[in-house]
Image (cartoon, rainbow, N blue to C red; front, side, top):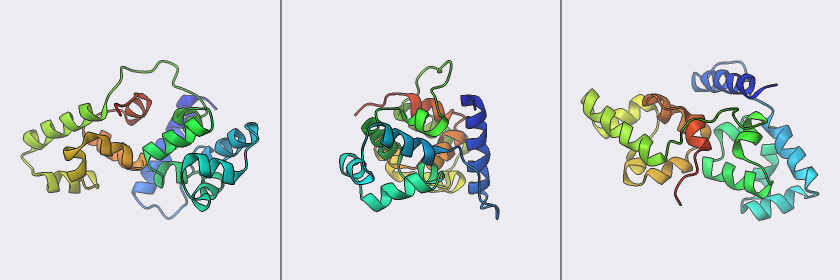
Length: 175
């Protein structure tokens, strides 16, 4: 399946997850990709968990459930896992990199757009957080905390300011 098709599958699954649809959302096969990447390196699940710096039980779920990579672990954890497995977050989520990546968008760019939205909508931070569905206090204090959100959180924040979350995910963020 192509990047575009897998991206569309992820968008549909995330929308269904967000609406808490009764049917289980169907995500791209991230669990299989994570497992294959580990096996290609000749590593055990325990090896990967140790190198990743997370509990083995947390890693097990990533090889069992596709949704885990999108809704449980943080963007930062996903990026660290991809590094341990010698690949990229996009490759784990979508099977490949986008064909023509857009210009980078940093976490600070996203927060700047959130600040504009605050002003334009005439709402306070708590109200905007309620609209987005995520607490934004930490994000305004430190844009880097966007990396502490799972993919579904990053997607919600980015959607609120008309930014492509995959572009943000694909952008190397300042340390």
